[in-house]
Length: 393
Image (cartoon, rainbow, N blue to C red; front, side, top):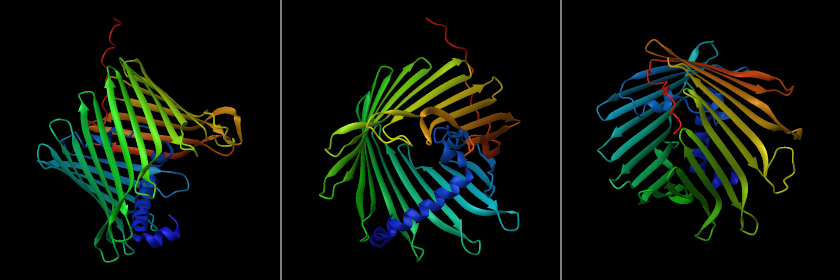
């Protein structure tokens, strides 16, 4: 955001600053989530949505030349309310851990069709006091016919301590038929005069036919004349064949004449060679390749290979390899730029996990840039399907 934009929209500036601080804390906590967005999120994170049993987890992250962090997580549920807490600590000047960021998320099942969520993020003031940074409130209603509506507001405290809405998201989903649905998402930002103005709209259509799912997503921005202008369209087709799955995605953007053209294409194939063994390969082609002048054609600029192995005892190992072109010699093909190894082992009544990330340095060698270790008493953190393969028919 430019200085002029900040003067016109101070609330938006505050929103960006607050979001940046929260995102920075999360990146310090888990470097791999920034470097490798294709790595699956840990099962611990999503399990709170389905588990009624309380659990706790502790993660320690060590990255060369950066401050170590420690994250404590907990999940509890009582009646129709569940509470998830996350506390991030970092090493202080005295060599001991000190509180850095707290996130508290409360989810309430209001009735059979309505779920209300409120998430609060707290930082630390100059004297170490707990300071509210951001509040996000969400309410989702699901109707019996499959339609749903969601409203989410994000607020930041102003200089007087009062909360000011800095973003509002409204999403509605409608089942047009048993095999198709349409959704519309509108994002509102401050208009600089104390109100909110629609700043982005996304329309999505999804249709299933047999084992094939087609999704089309259109992203639009206001053109200044009161109309929406298409800036990007995403087309995705996913086909399932038993336990195998292939996905193809195309991203189209309008050129100077308004004509849509493909700027990116991603193909993904997931296979299960044997019980407990899965492999996925994702290749991304783009008109923009580092080190090459754009010629308007699609070129392979990333390949991600992920291999998962699990045994009947619940142990699971995931290895991911990212290949990208060398910016100094883009014509030489792809080379391995990052490797991630994730090992999860059941331990007593919980699970232990370690994650090691290696990145290619300027000398061309892969070096460790992050090591995370995690312990949790959540027995549901590792779920492994070791069912026998179906015999060919």
